[in-house]
Image (cartoon, rainbow, N blue to C red):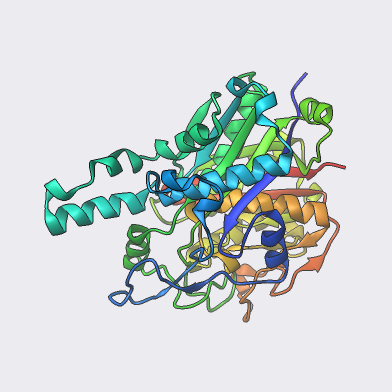
Length: 403
């Protein structure tokens, strides 16, 4: 019998809230986490705003002597991991840690560390490079640091599939449990606010001046953000034995590659991932109550994503609720779809649709129900969480509220 996989714990660190309750309260109130960048000087850039987390204290989650030995992405990941473990009621000392693993998605890894190393080398010379920082920046350090902190000895993976990596990580973690490689997985994504990402998207002229406006006619681009979200995955059988709360069941997922362009999205690839998720989950388009969009706020992405929604959902496309929480958080890169998975679980649990804020002017190419500006009650049972990434990578996750 195929194992049923459920989500029993939610951990999130974001610019609008840290922890499940604070995050959800801010999300449904339409709070924006966009503010002026403080982590580095933006005076040479044409834009000065981003989705930085201003109130994260790593000492609340990690021994202070360890904080300086790991990068900010690892700090955010450990924070969300501990929040998820606590939320799930996992008593790790009573469990076999060899059967608990970690699978995280990321875009940038510990790019802040790499920037610091390069600055030291360029400004002062190689002899001034802190050798202790060198092992901190590779992407593998993210999942490894979570495992080290929690002493988890099960499967340990990093999936660097850019801005769809969170969905890839959750899907693959489910496969590991189904395949018998683990009993419990901590899965999600993380990326810290990165100067190199800010430079890159600035050079692509993809950053909006002050606000993100997904699906709006006058949208001007995305906004670089940061964050982490991790969910606890386990079999339904195991969760029922523990007597814990269950947020949602992971019905399945679908992945695809546009094979079209390194940075420009293509609706056919997006639609293929959605259709694969539906097929694997045994669902039809009529079964979906809410669609959490990638919704970056760039002209091309939103147009192509809406074309994919129209292709898959046909005549339902403009009545199906579709929203983008990136309007509040900015684009948190590898953390984005993981944070959105948390949002989907809470939306289904509370029967409330998160809004797309900053929506002002309808766009004929994006004539969907984007839940503009205000959250609203809606009966939600089954949801899709869609994510796309540079390289044409797409991943769509199908979730169902567990009664």
